[in-house]
Image (cartoon, rainbow, N blue to C red; front, side, top):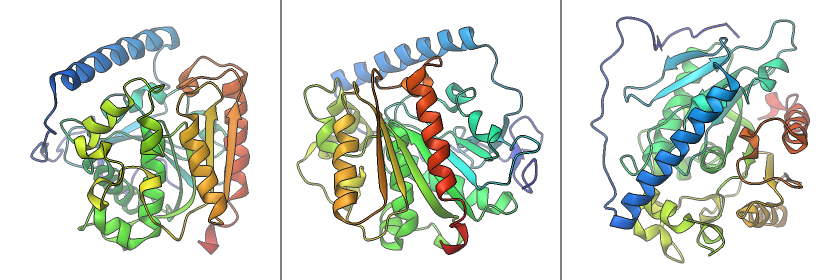
Length: 326
């Protein structure tokens, strides 16, 4: 794999294509939901700023590239460290409830992957409520098309994400495994232009709508409604509002690792999904971490985070040699 893209635009270069915000389309929000958006973005922005000050600058080896015309359709690429064995690329999707968060928050946390030889693509995407479902997923699909086209040898990938990004990673894995599901989300996406998925890792992902609507998940129902509209709170939904993997009917599923803290209120989301995959005969591994809360992947190094990294590397290594069979 080359150190840079064969085609595509570096975000700091000249002659970039014009930005395009024409796809902006807001869900109608209640006053309470507007306050949720403002409050969560302010809180998360302050949290990110504080952690950035404590951690220092993002590691210099990340390269930022634009994969689409929208101003948020950019990604960071980190080449494998010199001397590491060749590995298939990892595509990471950040969390933030579909309405906040940034890839920049993960620059330090993902370096363990290129240290082990995995090229990493850290994806940014347009967010709700300005860009509701299915726009974030469509942008992710566009990023995958761009990666396969622009980086030599990226025919197979590992998908990975945390929280809402864990949701999007598993959703994308299912879309890439079933053309019918893919066309329901993006009728214009050509499946031949997409890479094949070797595995998918969800770190405390949003995998089940019912879990998010429980009283012990603060703001969970609001996040669903902001992302996909009030219809997302219905007991059952049609294809247009199938926003979690538990909403989908599927026959194929790539090998899956589900990871969550034992003290995370959305742990049942991973447990429910793991039970379904086991029941239907799909390969799945569920890892829980004691004394770990939602978001611990971004916390300062501790035993839960170190254990998660070890488990991720072990899981990925189990599915490297099977690339040619998928």
